[in-house]
Length: 154
Picture 1: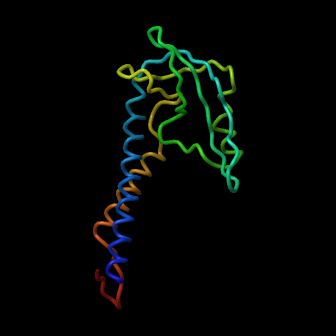
Picture 2: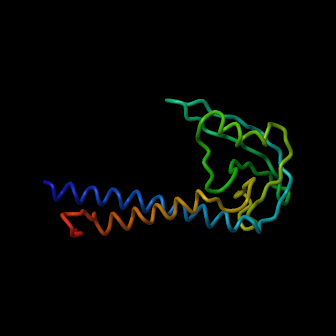
Picture 3: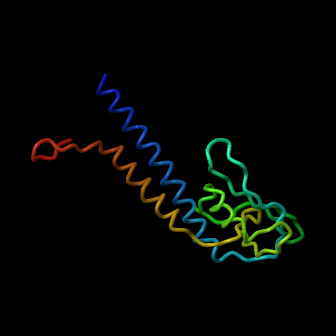
């Protein structure tokens, strides 16, 4: 039974690590690529801190409209890899620069113009999530290391 539990924990840690590393790397890559994207003027349509369901964690929500080659798009990506949940004060700092009706610079992917962001570039959070996820994946795959006496064993 203990062996099975150990395997389940390793699989769970590996799966969580894989997801974190994948998500962080995707944000890191998208953020790095977004610095070269063209820009167009856009208009903020919504800017709010969604009320928490439980506790005091709020969700930032900003949506904006922009036009590329005559086609109208709506985006909601503020930055790649940035936290959009937190205290009311933190969320207020995130959405503060984007009041409803404000004209904003929208960076869009020329290959897929419906992919856009307001603040291009990668964030430290995306890098950290990638590294922590990779570490969790390695720990889950290799297993745990425990110290017994003066020797390290698996």
